[in-house]
Image (cartoon, rainbow, N blue to C red; front, side, top):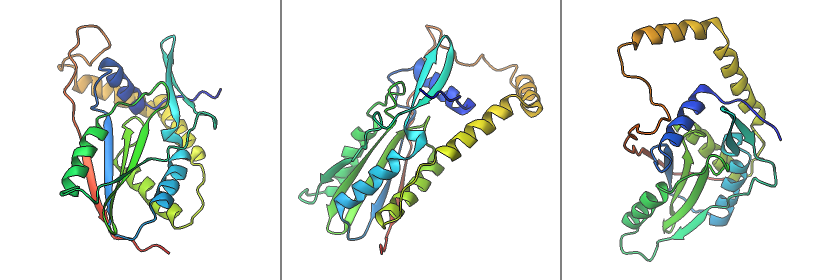
Length: 228
C-alpha cells in the first residue's frame, strides 16, 4: 500500500475534526445552476469519472503511532460515486424544496479514515433548469478546487477524456514537505511564535477542550452552458 505524507494544512484540519468528531464545520459544498437542456445520466456519469480520478478525493487519512499519513485508495476501493438524482419538477416550490434538501444533504458527515470524502447530486427543478451540487470534506477541497472540478465536469460532459491528476497532487505534497524542512519555514515559525506568544495555547486533543461551533459555507454559481 502506498503511503504519502500530509500537508500542514491537512494536518490542522484533521486535528480539528478528531477533536470534534461529530462536527460538520469542515464540510464544504458548492452548487451550480444549469440553465440548459441536459442529459441527466450523461452529466452524472461525467461527474463520476472526474471525481473518481481526482486524487485529493480518493485518499484515506491514517494515524499510526502518532504519525499521520494519507494512503491513496486503490481501484477496488475507489467506487465510482454516480451521485444522486432528484426530480422536483412536481413540487409547488421546487427551489425551496431543493434548498431544504441541500441543507440536510450538506450536513451529513464524511469518514476520513475510510476515504469517504465527497458526494454529489443533480436536482431537476424544471425543463432545462438544474442544480448540481458537490460536497466534500475541507481536507480534500477548497473553494478554488471546486471551480476547477466543475470545469473538468463540463469538459467531460462535452466529450473530453478524463485523466488522473496524481502527479500534480504528489508535486504539491513534495513542495510542502520541502518547505517544512527549509530555512524559510524555521524563520516563519520563529516569527509566528513570537507574534502569538501572548495568545492562548493552540487547541489540542486533550479531554476537556471545548469544541468550536459549526460554520457552514455554501457557494452558488449560475451557468448558462452551450455544449457541443
